[in-house]
Length: 293
Ligand code: NAD
Image (cartoon, rainbow, N blue to C red; front, side):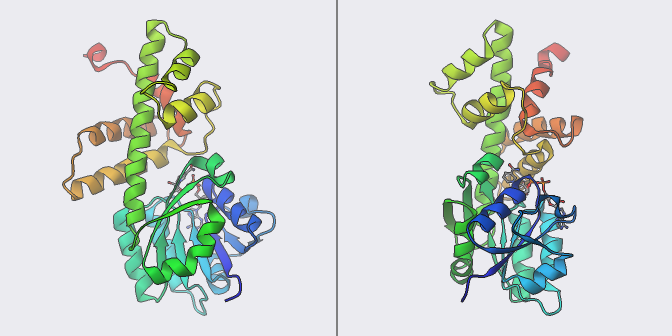
């Protein structure tokens, strides 16, 4: 087959960077976002509506807020008259259950589905260093492989059915959310004890407390006061909520998970939509449980 026409739905913080990668990689891209064309890559066509994407693209990539939206967009594409789309790649974080429902509805319509959630932030996406953890049956994976390689240089198949990518992504984001919340508490303590934050982060990064929170989020977003990672706290709260729901469904251990979920839920409710790295000032301003008793 000649190079496929790639549809891209959802041009937000992450989607705009990923769609741009596909254009730069040489794909003919037709893009769509309900919010309009502002963030469409320069050399992509912007579709008037979703039906135009469904009629013109062979493979469609999603970067949408959550499972409810992905499911709705998948159903609309599947139901479009004279549809051309044969495969969908979902890079959104939607959870295992939503991936299962979408697999069912797309399979019934004869559309192959590969879930391919991503990790590494908007800066990672632009640098083609985003981890893309994809899963799906052999035929679907084979058909979409060239498009996956257009998204990033760090792609890895993690399973033979859609949903397994989601399980790994939720486990990852639980760890990322926990490390960032815990690092925020540790730094708040250190600063109160009289340490300089920059010195603390530098030493933590050569010590056993190191994580993506200490070697990326704190130096790039907290210490600089930039708070501009491009990932909203409401999205992180969604990811931890999905993680915990699926942990409980699987009757897996949830002690740390429950605490992490509680912190992110309170933060997202208090300041909805702010950059997730602002968890540091949020945690810093939260008195200890002992102090509030
Ligand atoms: P975002 O809110 O910036 O972008 C979502 C986009 O989807 C918006 O532009 C919105 O207008 C569009 N949209 C919503 N409903 C739509 C519809 N029905 N049809 C077409 N477009 C629609 O979110 P984001 O940060 O780009 O994240 C997208 C997905 O990627 C989420 O699932 C998120 O959890 C995941 N993710 C994001 C990051 C990150 O660093 N931003 C990292 C890893 C994973």
